[in-house]
Image (cartoon, rainbow, N blue to C red; front, top):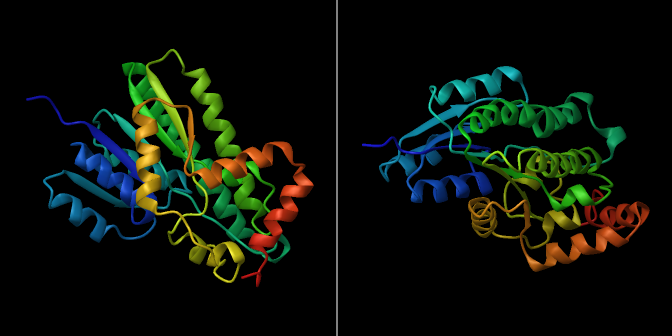
Amino acid sequence: MPERKLAIVTGASSGMGREIAMLAATEGYDLVLAADEPLVDAAAGLRRNGIEVEAIEADLSTPTGVERLLAAADGRDIDVLVANAGHGLGRAFLDQDVAAWRHVIDTNITGTLLLLQAVLKRMVARGEGKVLITGSIAGHVAGSFQAVYNGSKAFVDSFAAAIGNELKDSGVTITCLKPGPTDTRFFERAGMLDTKVGQAPKDDPADVAVTGWQAMKEGEHSVVHGLKNKAQLLASAVLSEAATAEMHRKQAEPGSG
């Protein structure tokens, strides 16, 4: 009997990560799930469907956390990697603790790259594999009162496109999912519930997950979920950074909600 395929999903305790894990399980993938908080509920629900699930609580902003996650694959080939772990951080940059903005960079950029490089080397050696990276339309906008987060997503969006090009003849595909505001715990954890964007209607994470999963399966380079987000992305391409920063300020300034 052939070995079942394996998918790693990070940021899987809730939101888009949990929804993507459910999609993978529906298609018969065994799972290694990771988050920086307990995954008991998410893992239990998937195991009831007969899926083999390894749940790892790890801080993926650190090399140790990434190593723990990779070890949980137990030497198996990784068919799909969903690099979804990320942290937001609102409010003025000068009011943020150094440890807080460094954690955003270490999670969104450094930890993501450590995981990607290790997994991609193995995928390329096999000549097959699919990767879905959660970027953001925020990476295309100068993010006043969310400057470090938006800057980190600008890096992720660009990096995903670059390595996708590097690996275009390898049999491995890289897809960057670029959601807009989504109904997850993101704004609560980023301290942005009192902002206009924090209080506005948001996309359903299940819908965003389907958009990303389908694009990954088809080997698309990137995908933006929703017409409103696509329109915002087009507008950001023609506006100056000063203009997008002012627009973002109106959405993200503390107390704007």
